[in-house]
Amino acid sequence: MLTTRRTCRARPVLALLLSLMFAPDALVIGQVSAPIDLTGTWSLDVHLSDHPEQIARAIEFDTGEFTRDTFGRGVESRGGTGGRAGGADRSGREWRPPTDRMSPEDRKLLAEITRPVQFPPPTLAIAHGERTVTITAGQAAPEALRTDGKAEKYALETGTVNRTAAWEGPQLRVAYDIGRVGTLTCTYTIVPTTRQLLIRVNIERLPGEPGPFEIKLVYNRTGNPAA
Image 1 (spheres, rainbow, N blue to C red):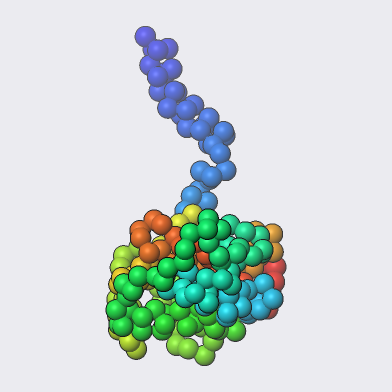
Image 2: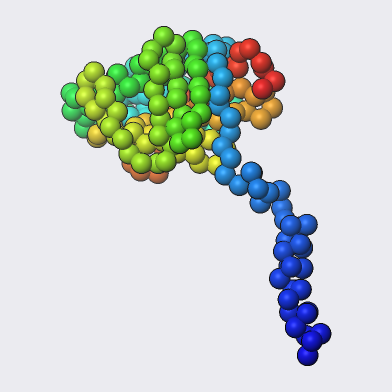
């Protein structure tokens, strides 16, 4: 009877030791939910980032606001590796102008919120807080993003939109709800091989349905490239 009790008491301890010995790396304390480190000062890599004309065309396609002139040019595809995707309708269907579903207020909000995307700041200074990430774009005032996923009001000169930010795996996702335009999303991540800051921008006209083209901005860390 005594032996049986000792065996029962030893089982939880043995199970704990085995779980610690054979636990996968993802379960090691400190690696469970640690976000990537975006801290530092970053400078825009103009050679790897999309240029303003590409960005303008991508925004027009993603919002459905493309014109006949835009339709025939083509922009960089979301799934491509730097190549071009023809803008013309290869199915042979007759081109029709997009349906006007944006209000003038929507267009003003879209223009203001995408201006720093089309003409990105030459530098970004990023600092982590306990539940925030503060980004200073160029000479602009610092902006603190709550990373708890809760919506907050983001004031613009042309109006106010809802903004949410949250860590999703190895990236920070920031979303702006722009009325009938849809949701503009910016994802910040670190490229594992080059340690560059990669910002991907897309517009979802419907929830969970990203637009066909994705904007890419690349920044290099200054000061200590190996950090």
